[in-house]
Length: 260
Ligand SMILES: Nc1ncnc2c1ncn2[C@@H]1O[C@H](COP(=O)(O)OP(=O)(O)OP(=O)(O)O)[C@@H](O)[C@H]1O
Ligand SMILES: C[C@H](N)[C@H](N)CCCCCC(=O)O
Ligand SMILES: [Mg+2]
Image (cartoon, rainbow, N blue to C red; front, side, top):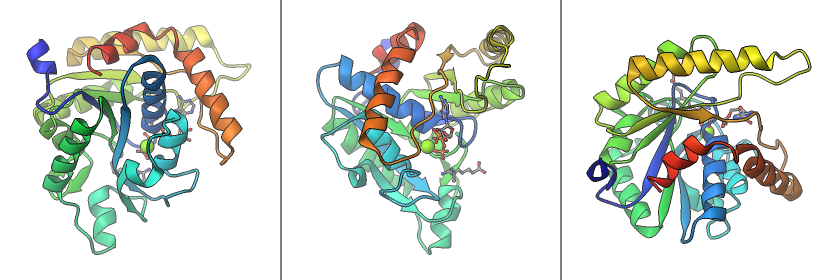
């Protein structure tokens, strides 16, 4: 088992999802913050491609990764390799600008970033099968870098089939070490919200996904949206809230500690 986890290039994880807008950036920034606070050495973040956003805006993954993690040894520009205008799969967004993303260059860059830090958290774009270049997907990049993959899944109805197929796809492309975590973006806990029913559904979904995909489901991220303003105090508070609200996620933390 350890041989499987000893990647050639260093320690890292690749955060992917069953689809887009499911909470990868929130989770990646929170994990990096947790690592930054609890581990010695340098934690680094990498977003190979972001699309549909502009650098320096609060919507940009690069900005939210930087502020959510609280990393200070890096600038926003260095966190991200490609920033593309159109809110599309990277391959298509690049084509709209007359550009082509080179998968092999991204792999070389990933190797370099893995070597340059003590642990690297990589955030994909969209889900596991989203293309970076013709026939090369997020799962291919994770596989080429020999990174364990954490797949963010929706916590609600419809997730079982999406998650089982995403796990199988990632494995079919060569990702050997996969786990699933439920995100929290599709619901808001209101006064009418039935916590017990929600938790029962999470429990049942966990059981089905673990059985059908033979994959560990390592927890559920709490409801904690990123601030929607460029305001340092809001981000400082978000980071504090993240540490407090995720302190109980021991299965997720054990999974991360074994890999980062
Ligand atoms: N745990 C959470 N609690 C509350 N809201 C969340 C949570 N995770 C994500 N969200 C909200 O859902 C939206 C989408 O989340 P996020 O940007 O992290 O998704 P993503 O998977 O990174 O998307 P992309 O594929 O564009 O990179 C954001 O507005 C975010 O604040
Ligand atoms: C714009 C969006 N938020 C992401 N940056 C890109 C998502 C690409 C999804 C492509 C797809 O699965 O159809
Ligand atoms: Mg994101």
